[in-house]
Length: 377
Image (tube, rainbow, N blue to C red; front, side, top):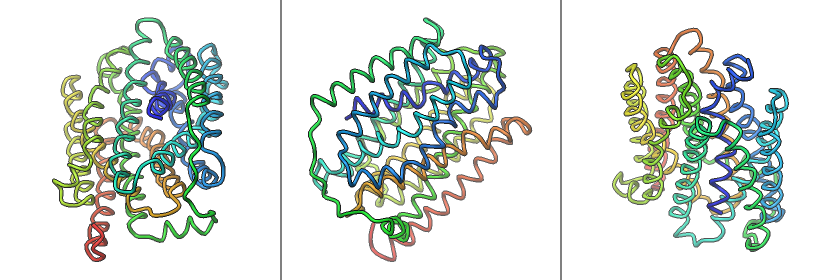
């Protein structure tokens, strides 16, 4: 499951640090280049709830085997393609099957452990997704400088095919613990204040995360005057902080007294990092990104574990909704703020993101009040 999670994140984000490079070799605009990330996030945001619904009815094992076979074929096609239209079509198609992987893995893990260990298991899962996001972004940039941009996508095609075989041979069927789902279950989950506060806050958290990571490669080119895959990939080293955070979610919550406190603190750190990013220096930006990752991953890791811990039924739908809000924020974040950057520059771009994070902070403040009144924390 963890190996498959890493590969899924690599598939999703391998193109992100290469967007300025694609802009040059494909002779496309910055907007068109940024769509490589948006294309996979938009369908992911809408499809997650559908997969969350159907994974309560059909075999998670069959779904995972199928999507990894499709991943393998599509990565090989992408690697040997020179057409922007075809490459974007592949990314959109992948966006529709990524939710099956993420929601399926999350549901599989949450059903495979006891209720008391769900928070720790989901924290470990988030740690693996962070590792995958780092590996995909860093290696795609590094290998582009060494072997050319196609190499890493060929490697992904091989590894996802291996994952498909491993799933076929080793993955067990798990008897579902869910009751038969109905569409009204979605509204029931959304009617719980704790869920909607976390969903709305995480929308803003990932909006800002994708906005910065999508525009940062272009800003580095502006500062340096040329694209460097290795230099861009180096900006993701701070992901290591996120891995440490995700594997220590329980300790962070204990130190913060409650999960809502931990998320609140994470978002405050997140906002502070945006101020540091205004310093126009490669090393200053690198240091600022360490703070950026610390705040973002604290909020996300704790929120994911908290939602799963409190979900007593319909975990597939609960996870699907979380993923939908999360990636809806990411999809908009990979596209909308680019307009601000294009016309207002880096500082105005960061200021707008800080305002949105303040809105997320407000929703977590509401969560704190709700849980205190219900004595749920």
